[in-house]
Structure formats: C-alpha cells, structure tokens
Length: 328
Ligand SMILES: [Zn+2]
Image (cartoon, rainbow, N blue to C red):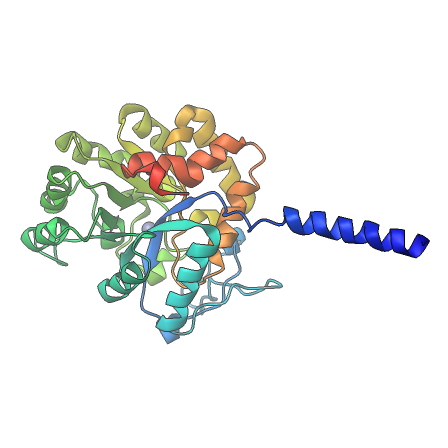
C-alpha cells in the first residue's frame, strides 16, 4: 500500500512536471553592428585567446617580432576552417542567440549569408580610399537597395583623415540616401602597426578629425567604430557636440585587458551616452567570439539590465531606424 501511494505521488509529480514543460524561451534579441563577412584564408586562420593585448612588450628592429595573437590560454577560440563551416557556424549562432548582424566584406560571402538568413543580416558596403571605387560606382551600389549601411570605412589604415576631401563624395552619397555610416577610428595594429600596417597612423584615429566632415554633412548619421579607443575625452566631446554620433564597442571588447575595456565603457555611460553605445564584435573568423563578446556586457556589474538591453539591442534599433516589433 505504502509502495502504491509512493508510486501514485511520484506519478503525480512527474505529470505536473511534464505539464509545466514549455518549449525553451528564445533569448532576448541582440544586434551585432560590426561583423566582417570574410572568405576563409587558410594562412590567416589562427587560434586566438581573447583579451590577448594584456601584454605588448614591443621589440627591436634587429630582432624578429613575436606573433601578436598569443595562444597561451586554456581554451583558445578556434577559427572556422572553410567558407562552408564559417557560414554554418554564423547561421547557427544567430539562431541560438537570437541575433541580427550588420555585416560587410566579401560581396559573395555577404550575399550568401543574406540569402540564408534574410531577416538576420543587414548588409553594408565600405570604402576607405578613393582608389577602391569611383564615387559613381559607390553611389550606384548604395542605391541598389541591397546595402542598408555604409561601412566599414577605415581611412586611418590608408593614412587618411575621415575629413580628407577625397572621401567627401562618398559621404555625400550616404547623406543623400539617408544611409548610416560606420567609420573606424582609434585602435589598430595590436602594438605593432608600424610593422604590419605601414600606412596606419594612430593620430588619424582622433575622433576630432570627424568634425569638419560632419559639419559639411549635417544630416549624416555616423557611428564611430571601436569608440575611438583609447581617446575617450575627444570621443565624449564629439558626442557632446554632435547629436547623430554613436559608437560601437567592436574589437577592443575582446582584445584589450578586461579592466581597461570596462573603464572605457563605464566612462562613456557615466558621461551620459548610454543610449548611443552599440554592441559589436569585429567578428572575423572565430565563431565562439560572439558569445565571448556578449559575456563582457553581461558581466558589467556597473550596468543595469536596461542599460545592457540598450547596448545589446535598443540603441541599434534606433540608430539603424529598424522596426522593434519585427524582433522577438
Ligand atoms: Zn575597424
């Protein structure tokens, strides 16, 4: 009898547990505004330990420089080994994390991703120097309807200021077509740009260099990629004087030491710009980088739940003029 009661009780408990089982809830939506759609390059496929720039010892012109991507951690992030593996991993991650991406790079790869996940990919096209494409060709591409964003624009790597007159026609096209622009400013070269990016100049990443260009294009909406790291004072002053300037956190949130990342992000929020910070990764080849980067925001104990949601989603909806009701 006792056994029967026990059996009955356990059956009831099991029944109620089963009745309560509902399908797993989708995570809250996330928008990553800085994704590179790249062809896999086997000679550039490297493992990577996040926050690897904790040590930039420099070197000597007479000595071999060490590789900047160190792999001295327990579980380095693995690169995708083929275009097919990359695409499958990116698509699966977007589904799992309920994530939409703003992506730019190789046009073939970008079109493949867009076709496979039309509601999760917002395509962009960048230009960093007038040698890459004429203003006419660029304007035609922007007008095609496929691209919704101009980015990544990285004149700093070409030794150019974003206010260089040679880039003016491209920004004018984006302004006229009401297309938001992402411009690389600040961080680059991983402590050895003089060896790997010879046209790069740290001084050309100064956020103030955007001022003349913005004055010439008063309706242009831009986001400063990498938040102009490490020039926080100029970044804050620029946002304080330009209502249409936002920033993204790409790149530096997984490469620099975490204390440095949090100090920079905290300063932006504390200066009053919590509604103008966009979440982004600078994804190139490591599928697990998405989760690694999200964890930095999730672990920021100085941010409220609402501030995290703004950074991960709401601010991008506003900046890119998206319809929030289409995301769930
Ligand atoms: Zn960049």
